[in-house]
Length: 321
Image 1 (cartoon, rainbow, N blue to C red):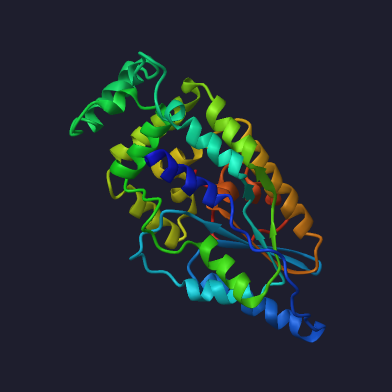
Image 2: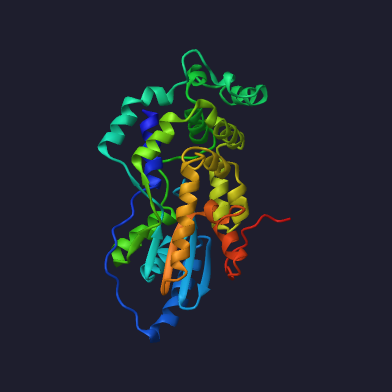
């Protein structure tokens, strides 16, 4: 069932941090050399990264994307080596879902996946967007998509038309850094938690029209064609950060649940802001891996650090004037 596949994928993005373990102490004589080596390795990997230093605290922020094609060439081994030499890792939020939460999803699956009785996509989309959707769906075997929930229509457009695969993809920066932390026994600190009941409530109780922006953005991504996801990954590898954030695929991911949820999304962003504030007063090297959009979007983490007077060293993230 597609709903369970998509839900499991999104929950995976919010979960999976390793428990903290003891790290190996560093001597003052080796700290400067170690820092230089970590930064060089991280930059050599090809993933977008930025460094911010205050006193004896250095923060390395790595911008990650999901949906990387398996055959995309970058250097994850270098990023893994850099993560292994860090003093601590900031990882994305932990999702804490109980068995009860999962049963709620299964119990309400049909309600979540279908339109209210007697309604179709045309009841929620403007004539222009409905016509664009009709054109994209012209080759479908049946018209069941008209009665599917708008959230699921958006997911289907991303997967079937824009080339965004939740599975069968290569390792992304989050996967690499988490693996390095486990192997090197580097302490991992999730920036926060997301309660499973809150996440499920936001999905079950959202009115259908709340997903209209998701479908509109997914339509634009689908119109870009099956290479849209690869183009985004190529921009990511080439450090064209503003192009990644502005890509139709990234825009759609930002508008769809959970990042598009008006209650969940601010919570995710606030947790990252608080974790980075703590990292800037923690001695040693902290490596944080976060969605590149969260770091580089207008008013995001990098803009916030710059506004506070920090020197942010790394690729340009702002769109050209």
